[in-house]
Amino acid sequence: MSDPQLAAAAAALAEWRKTRQRSSRIPEDLWSRATELADRHGIAKVAVALKLDYTSLKRRLATTAAAATATAPAKRPAAGARSSVPSADFVELDFGLPLAPPPCILVLSDRHGRALRIELPGAASSDIAEVARSLWQTGP
Image 1 (cartoon, rainbow, N blue to C red):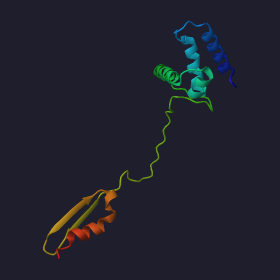
Image 2 (image 1 turned 30 degrees about the horizontal axis):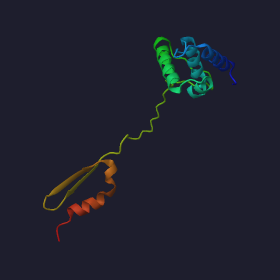
Image 3 (image 1 turned 90 degrees about the horizontal axis):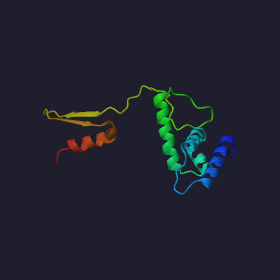
Image 4 (image 1 turned 90 degrees about the vertical axis):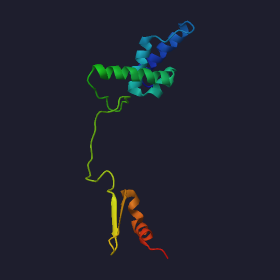
């Protein structure tokens, strides 16, 4: 292990596993160390190094992260460090384009005053000429 804190936590957990009683739970101080390391190095790496259940570590990390953000101002992780808390930075890019294509409105009328109005969403307007021809044709 390249991180001395990760190695120390692995050693502490190994020692606890040797001396623990059957079906006893991991002490909170060891879980706390594991979640701090998972916040810095990532859940998967720490779970493997400390031989912990990935899902349990992830759940504890989410709980501690939620508690930390509720009580303290947001802090940025060190460069290159992983964090389970998403960044609050947001950049809006406005290209001046509409979100959806405008609807296509087709109004057909003949010399007798009959009219036909068809409204199609923008996505359906590609074959409008063919639709108009087939609807406007008189019978054989």
